[in-house]
Amino acid sequence: MQTSSALESLAALSHPTRLDAFRRLVRHEPEGLSTGQLVEASGLSQSTFSSHLAILVAADLVVPEKRGRQMIQRANIEVLRNLMLFLAKDCCGGRADLCAPLVAELAECC
Image (tube, rainbow, N blue to C red; front, side):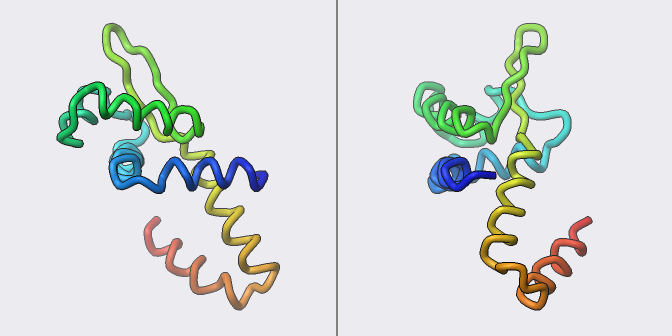
């Protein structure tokens, strides 16, 4: 991942509504959620939420899929993985001792 892509992803996730929506989508992988379900969960109007969703889609964190008459939103797990790896590898600078606690904690969630 390039620095510019990482910054775009981080900027997209830097708003509470967008972070909540993305986290909700990650929890609902691989089936995703309809746009209506996301709007309802957010408590916002459709138009307000749509602007937040557009930012997540532009950052490639969310991928919309048309299923019949519904738009299903899915978290782009590959982008999330790349962002996490970018941050860990860049911040740890190749020092395994710095990354070991992070890796151990992530292993627990699997």
